[in-house]
Figure 1: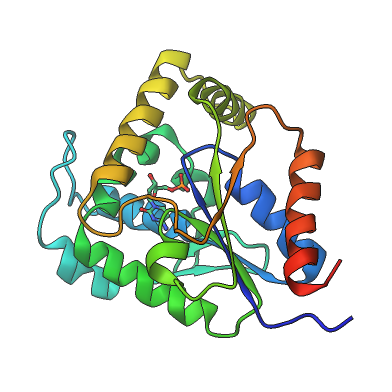
Figure 2 (figure 1 turned 90 degrees about the vertical axis):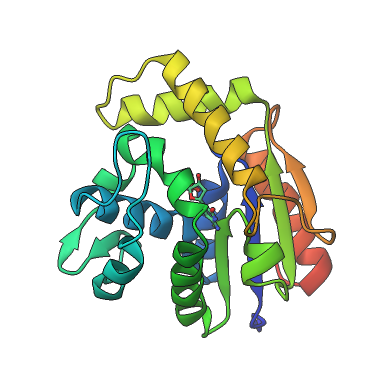
Length: 227
Ligand code: DC
């Protein structure tokens, strides 16, 4: 079976299960999976460690210059590394989650991340998830999926994920963080979260993962004739 050189863009709200779905599709079709949110999280961790963001998320403008010295890449397991250090665990913490949206709203941060995404995505055959992949980063993507789910379902997923990683979040805090992130992500000036006109919408509030996967495989088969 010949697999075409396509880009699949999966965008949508926080905690809709984008990365789980994207990883599964990538594995099934031997595509490269790229998690664009991880890069925004990596930049946020960097800003925090360098003291370039304060408690109320005011970002020091010198972050722009400092980014020239930041090296982020994915290792063979798809985990994000800052230079030699694997930062996968830190970037998933509530501390980073609570400041990532304001950082991702800064135009020069978006330019920095977009450049990296294009570099990583040059080889084609990729599945990338994020907020603006189908609208701004790869508007030419051959398949675009826009994911949504009810707030209740998303908050519960995020809560369970944090607990499974050993954190002890409060459910109200998780809900508050989701709402804030969705608001900032959809209202920022540069590349806000929105469904691309040619994206297929997937609301998985009441779907099992198997049903979701079957839905996407149906789309892929219909569009590209691959199973
Ligand atoms: O998918 P995630 O929750 O790991 O993303 C973290 C943040 O990064 C999210 O709040 C918005 C931002 N983001 C973005 O603005 N554009 C992307 N393509 C991916 C993520």
